[in-house]
Image 1 (cartoon, rainbow, N blue to C red):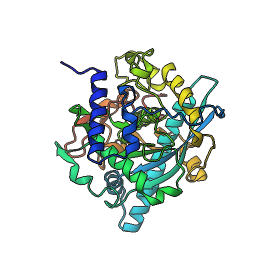
Image 2: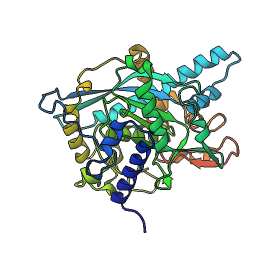
Image 3: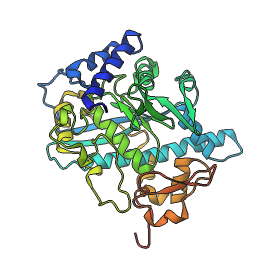
Image 4: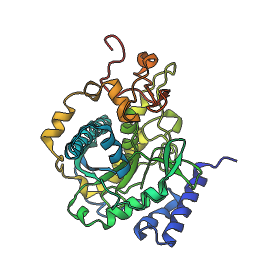
Length: 371
């Protein structure tokens, strides 16, 4: 019999308690899991009476894990190792500036006039060596050319890294996103982890302010990262315990699945919108989070503005987008060009076989005559 979400929530709660008992998780994380049998749910009581402004600034640290760094380093070409490293870093800055701008646009799209959320790219942390997550690669499972990793232990390692890394003392980001090329799976539920993991309500709290997101296509990654950030800001999945008034099948950003608009499927704008349940959750949680009241600073405001002044689909052709998804020599399948607004298909660089990315090309990509 298929497990209900409530069953899975209880299972995951118990799993985190087991990890804590084995001294694998900080105590403050486990203290979150026992509340109302809710999946990693946290609601701070601190300063609830304090009236904060209705403008909230989520200052984001973009963390590139070693596997993803290796991917970008292998994608750029240069005879000099120094130049290659510099070009890989520049590529990362440009790609993730566009991603953060896309996430910011989703939050700016909230039409409730009582709340305004801005997403600010505060800093980059690029992990070029194994020293930070040195035991991660030993946990990777290779299957059919894909690298899998159990998401829950990885999230635990990320939490411990943020909690114990002295360099992070000087970083005042409110939410951190570890982007990875590993495919996340969930050993507890014996399925995939949906492409991301996060502690609900953890924004501003060191350690549990972190999330993990798989790096896939531009469209998919923007929505996945916005979804995990939504959890950090206090929102549950639509249809779950804290958002029962909103249906999962309506496919809003905080729905349990990240859905695509396939050719032939009626267009649905909801995947780009937060439900009223999510917005109400933000309105309950954010006034308790004092770290969101100041605007902060971009990692480099001039560079950021230069990167995002053109839409990502203008900066990156469809072929380059495929290369950023699948690696060097991956290109757009010629037979799929007319449908890339909804479903972009890229070639496997090893076999040349066309593979779907399950989402359309980046915003601004040419997808037909005058379109």
